[in-house]
Image 1 (cartoon, rainbow, N blue to C red):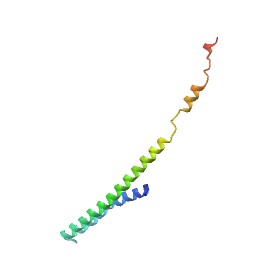
Image 2 (spheres, rainbow, N blue to C red):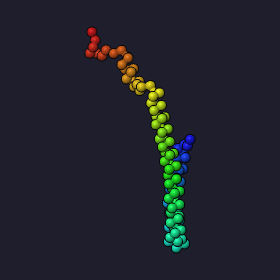
Image 3 (cartoon, helix red, strand yellow):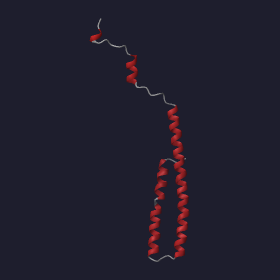
Image 4 (cartoon, rainbow, N blue to C red):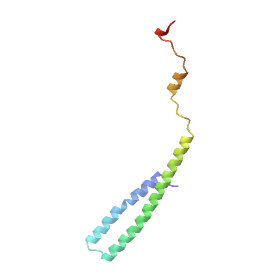
Length: 102
């Protein structure tokens, strides 16, 4: 089971695509790579990031599921909220005011 830090790490890992694209851009602009090599790199990046995003989304779904399970458990095991002040007022005897004297 993963925790929220795993989710955060996977999100940050997916942001690395920006760095990977910059490296590829530099290689293409510097004419260090042929069109064929560039195409192969792009196909590899596509596959790699498809896997990363699938893993990230699975982790996200698990966290959502756990959150809703905990929330449902918490809500089912809580006593109804009672305003303590209101319940004390309702139970206390009414005091007679100055205008209510007999």
